[in-house]
Image (cartoon, rainbow, N blue to C red; front, side, top):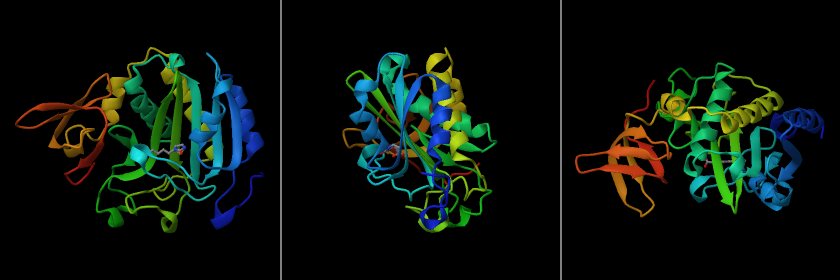
Length: 274
Ligand code: BTN
């Protein structure tokens, strides 16, 4: 595949450029495709290649059955974003397993901040624009606008870390009204460079003794908000999100109790502003 315009005016990935950037990382073997069902599936099919100290990365120009958290779909037109999954031994990411999805979210934030892009995290790892200074604001009523997400799977002793980011997605192709893209928000970013910076950041956060929690909390717009969250037993809890723990759990407080939420979908009840 060459670096050319694809369907809908989106630019296809340049595979050889990407391969050479990934080879420079030294810790990942690349699988790059025009079209796959899901890059998480590609990693799953190639897990035998994953050994201690050497992972694999799958990247696709288009996913036909991209998956999101909580059994949702993740869809984007070919060439409009980043669909990437990393496979590695869990022991190569020596953090608490339950915190890894949050740390990967933080890696995306730290990478985008290098481009001075003001993104934030909605617990646990939605990548959002929370500021009100976007042309897209009118359609979303000042709500958080989601630009990316992360799906982490644990398969035996392997981690599959899937990252989806809307890069050049246009208004007319948005899957839902509260979605957005870097381009819609006014940021033009080269996907090849962004992918390589993301891989560097994940490598940094997994290998250094880095205090991710303080950084995470500073980037997390859920803390301090009134929220409603359905926990894994189906109970809806409403209260104020007051903290995030080293386990990755969100602490929600109301008049009755303090709850530690480990899995769930959080709805911010306040209007989300700066
Ligand atoms: C979410 O916010 O619900 C998570 C979205 C994760 C999407 C990415 S795209 C690359 C990888 N492959 C998938 O099928 N899903 C993840």
